[in-house]
Length: 149
Image 1 (cartoon, one colour):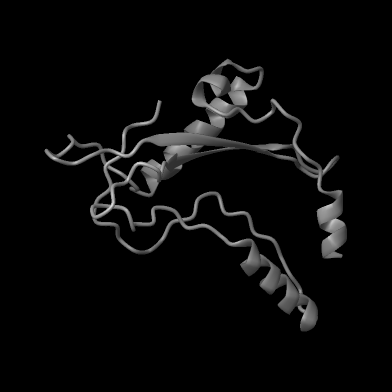
Image 2: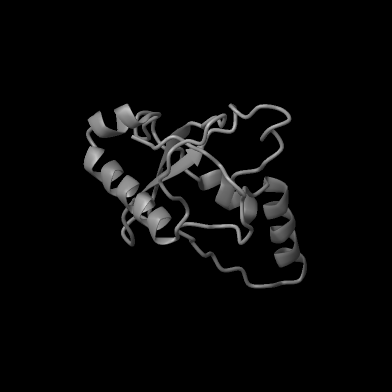
């Protein structure tokens, strides 16, 4: 069943997902991307993820990037969903200052495969849950990032 599900997954055509903010606001689907970005910003604000402040002296800022994904819905059942995620670029930290900090939780494909193997092995039922925004419960001391466009 797993192999079948992976084999029938369709690839999103090129040009549907913008690479940058400029592309997102100037493409044919700009209204969908703008709504997705607004939803992401509202979620971040509601969860008190950040606060605006002046940059402390001697501190550097990390840059941000919007990541855009269009998730296909089930044909005839649900429409496509437009997702925009604001991420901090991890390529600008400096060793000895903020080099070893992790700013975003990610899932490893190995973990998913192990979970699916257990489901199959023990004949369990698997349900899917779509989480709009996931946050760690840990507190980060301080991350200075530039505001997104």
